[in-house]
Length: 455
Image (cartoon, rainbow, N blue to C red; front, side, top):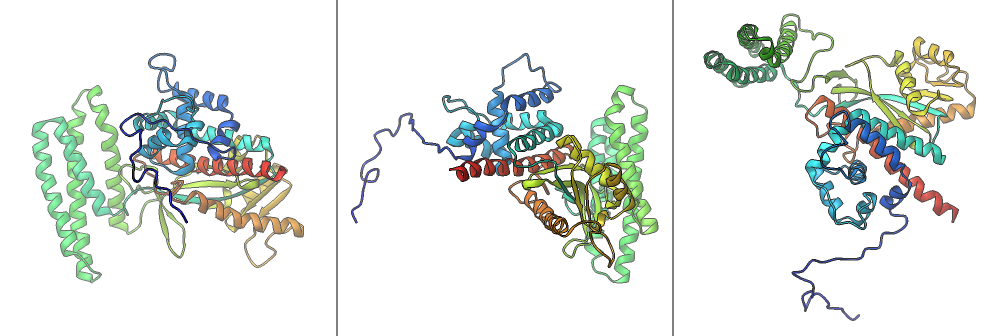
């Protein structure tokens, strides 16, 4: 077979000059399909609704809204970082069509991507996902017939919480506050902080193992550590109370938080039990220890989410209103509230696992006149009483697919669990964008497959 040697034995004639290329983007390219089918005007209204709460959208440098919305959509479909998205918008032909840049040299930088996402907020991301689901309903890909729900944990991006680490970190934070308040206070706090560090080192080096002596020594040192850090907090609190109202505003809230966390640690040391709703992170204040009783993980640290699978594989979801662990036997009111908010009416069929078998849930189904009660019953009796054979088989199938739906959004691609986030608000936002990314990919598949089947 002969060989072509262009570009190997001779350099390109265009090297060193600005190079422009023509790229053919196929009709079934997923970005082109979305560019032609998404309701951009409605998306723009949602974006401006939430941006206007943060900035004056009628003054200042104009923002290319289609560019930012396109970048936001492409990023969530693929799980790109902000810098990856910046690069894709600059060089990927399909993404440029999605951003309406096919006849422009304009691009975007990673800081603008982050700023736009934060302005949009978690509420904006939830509304955009609702709009995508309604677009799928309009096309006939899904509807309000099915509500197959379950709860899962969005694990927070925090280290495994230990009380000793929490107390050491609180001590370090208090040193920083003392440094900002006054030099004399700072010196006093520093002296107490050095004691905290010595105790912490002793715990780490000399209390290893499960021998009785090591455990008793660790208990003794932990109590001493807690007492020292609490003393630091009281010293700073006394100093802050003498400040003017305007000056102490910036310190009171954080000192109250540290006081609450230290009191919870003291309660555990005295009783051996954790208080309900115990805090497990210094920055992710909504994270809780949630007992799952799984073979791989008995406890997960994060927040509970309600995930609902719709017909056709589309997803809606929302964080549970109650933080921490809780029984699913009384959660159906939250499930249906989120369902009706997104679809506009109650479902024809509700599917839930045995964890949802509770009087409250069954009563709600009757009150709302939902046709099929697909909540699996506990015990050795009939698991789905009152349902016909085919309906029961459908309920079993949808129950299995609900687990697959949760597994889908927990893929690294979507970043639902342990998201790249540094605040509680950002963690919830990442949860909504993970669901949005999965729905966008489902929608584009349906939009591509249906025309192919017609031909």
